[in-house]
Image (cartoon, rainbow, N blue to C red; front, side):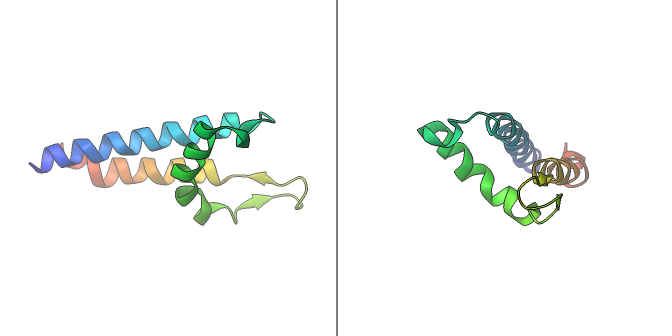
Length: 87
């Protein structure tokens, strides 16, 4: 039973990582915020990215946002140290 829950959590974390990657690539497109799919993607990934958005380099206009990278690292740490030992 615990193994099944661990596998489900592992799969959810993997899906969230891919969602963050897709959102990061799509954010370079000018029409990113205009369609329904991208709004759903933002709704799913915003709670993961918001805590890390204070880690930026550069000024306000040309800041580099490292929140996707930090969120992916945090999810990988959770996946490796907490979820995968239950397999």
